Length: 50
Image (cartoon, rainbow, N blue to C red; front, side, top):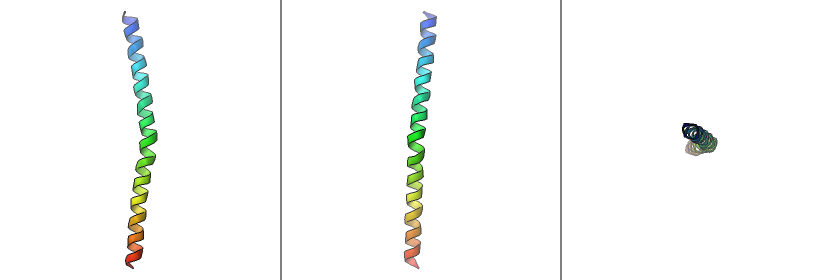
């Protein structure tokens, strides 16, 4: 029984790591795009103000 429980815990930990990696892979580019978009719109506003 304990071997089954240990295997189940290892599998759940593996799934959790995979989900965390997937979240990082999707969130990091999204955050970069938002930051770049904000910087570009700010630069455009500053250029138009001149």
